[in-house]
Image 1 (cartoon, rainbow, N blue to C red):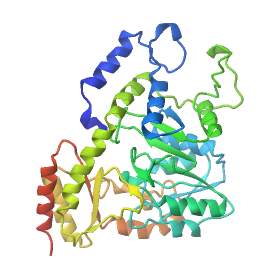
Image 2 (cartoon, rainbow, N blue to C red):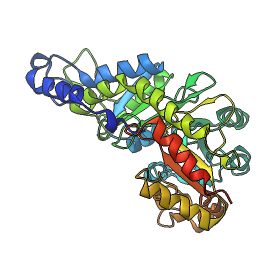
Image 3 (cartoon, helix red, strand yellow):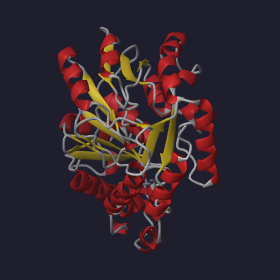
Image 4 (tube, one colour):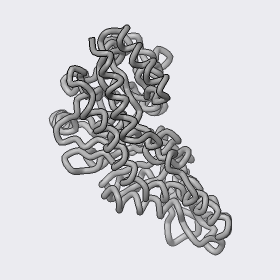
Length: 377
């Protein structure tokens, strides 16, 4: 599940090394006083390991979404279509640009329903923003075909899916751009932090300038005399965050391997009468959450009580559904958007999400599956 479970002396040592090497905590300049540029090295490693052309490290996943939308030319009044099962940050990034979030219902993968998405496209639609929720990819083939049909851009919200693949490509590589999060509950963590990815030079160029007050980082000028063509904002990542990120990234393959081992211990032993979350064809999830359906409320509550008693807990469903389902966001969305997501809300309330903890063994998950099986009516 989250990278914080594997934090050890490696992260501590690399942060200490920053201070041993001059204590430069800023990503730019101070060349004579430093030995590393950790932010730039983190970006390069992200490119190398996850096969991106361009990666930009930023201050949060929310910032990554906003920057990418800005790079895709989303303006006030434009409509951005996203999905009902989500984290509110995606909607906040849309709203912060003055754009209008339009919410689709979800399919059996708990991600964007492509047919519902098409029904919501208008002349104001600018971007489709699918979210690979809890490490499971959306139907990207359907979404990309839909975008091509209507000449729309696509931004992948990969904040909960670092390392997931679709048709052999790492998510964030499938669409025009991707946004990642490294907060403390994510697959790999830098405490806070994010990444904007794209294979398009112009999107990367704009994003780099926008996240750094418009700085072009022109090599012909010192930073204090740097050139600029746009105004921006400050969404920069610090050297400490990036140093930790480099170490965490080196552990990603271990996290994914251990996730799958534990996930399959449930999958292979949980009774087949339980309906699982759908995995789309061509999807390779990160296996950080096992989600299944229990329609009867009494039996569902009993299983949730078991999960809490055994100290597994749940993940978003149901413990944090108010922050992960658009139906509850009347402080941010119109009444029309709230009402049309009731179908998704009802569906999500039948689901239980079991977090995959690396501190628990595959045998723990096998035993848990057998205990859940006892609740079969």
